[in-house]
Image (cartoon, rainbow, N blue to C red; front, side, top):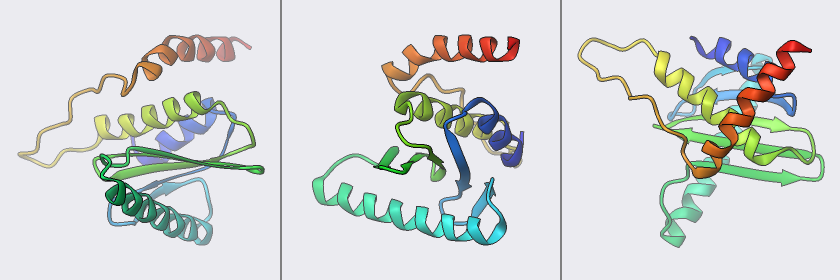
Length: 151
C-alpha cells in the first residue's frame, strides 16, 4: 500500500481527523491530504515541532519521542514517529486521544509492512501494539469498523 492509499484509508475510518501528512526523517513530505503549498508548510511546521520536542527530550534525559499531542481550543495536532518517519494529523476539538493515536500507529505500521524492500534489506516484523492502551483499544476499534460498515 502506498502512502496516499494508507492516508485515504485512515481518513475514512477516523472521522475526528481533518488533515494528515506523512513526513520522512529528512523532513520531506511522502503524502498528505493537503494541497502542495499547504502540505509543504505543514511538513515544515511538523519538522520544527519535532525538533523542539527532541530538544526538550534531550534536556530532560528522556527516551526518543515516539508520539506527541498538542491540544488547543480549536483542535489538536497528533504525531506518531517510528523509524524516523512521522505521521501527523490535525483534529477537531476534544478528539478521542487514544483512538487517534491507535489509528495513526496502525497507518504508520501499514506503510512499514507494505514498503517495497530493496534487495538485501530486512523487513520490519509485524509490531505488537505499542502500549497496553493500544492493545485494549484494538478489539473495540475493529468492532467500530464493522458497525460503521453496516450502517
